[in-house]
Image 1 (cartoon, one colour):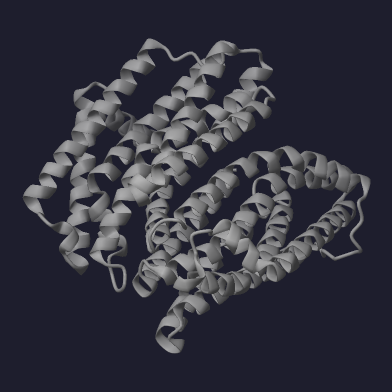
Image 2 (cartoon, helix red, strand yellow):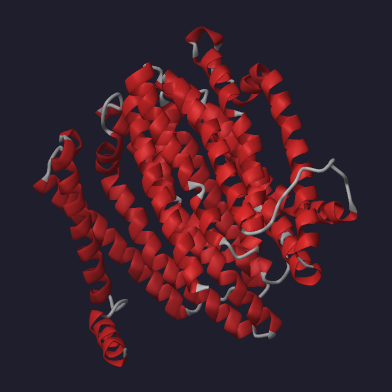
Length: 517
């Protein structure tokens, strides 16, 4: 299990690094303006369907059934089931793809109402989205094949195939920018091309594993009906999240040109700690809480939840305050090249700060949600999700005019805080979540240490590197790295001063492990 975790984690880290490089190239060659805005819409539409159908919900329904058949009835029966599922999913997605290609102008009218025909963004978005939309069919099918590999305990290719998305993306961006002088079109082509590459790699890996998938005539067999019944609750839950993202996209198209780009790059930076910490917390906590529920150990469950919140807080709050302190410098260093100007970086930094305010809430939602799932309650988080969806829409409409590109991320932050409050109150009433005095005291001290780190980091930035966002190249990157390192040392020293962390105890534990190894 540890080897599988390391393998998946290594591929995920490589994918994130390459994804950052890909985003940097997008910023440098497309900048922040009408072309980038049109491309972002072209990427978000198939990506939304990928997240809805291809990830999470579908795998949660398919993988357990596939594993059960593989274990109970053997490989032949499991292969037949996987082929039927592949056939049904492909037929459904092919229909969606054809309809999308035909009705694309009307779809763009709905999801991007701010793209008026006079500015050129509308026609460009229609063209680019028609190029990228087949990615929906390819990547959702690839997700099913990856589920087969996971069921066979072949985790390496399933995790590694997605790296090819960024490799192909980087290659086509460079090809479009340096050879064909049409970065947007070739970047869109790269998305669909990467879908072919990922699906091909996964099918090759399944064949090497000794399983030959086919495409029989789509049939709604009892097994398919069982899978659809399991799929429905997950689709509803995923739908709430995707609708939230769609609302943000819709509102952002009503903002001035470039706003979609600023929001995209800000969200990409915010997703780094959110993706790592949130996913880790939710994934590792659920089985532990489920065991406590099975053993009827409510006290143990409460203690586990408190400990998880403590662990998440000690990493989340410094990330939040660090982004608030260094947002302009981070955005300028990561993306401030080529056509992405210093003004673009500063505008994107404002959006990043609004996102960062909600970072602790988003991660704590991931921590508290398993408290419901462990008790078999999947409906309550979904209901709360739809409630906060309505709140997010109302806040977006209220804030996008006065706050422009800061409005949508601030609306998401407020909605996340309300979501977290509902989850915490309901779990408290059910005696699942009982924050003790020690947890409250530690949380306050962690927040104080994070705040102190942020204040001192801003002060040092103004003293050591005034106007750092205007610096260029390697010097800016080196100075930002130095400031982040100093910020880390300040935070650890503050934790020690406030009695949260004890470096001497940690050092003794490490030395003890070394002596016994």
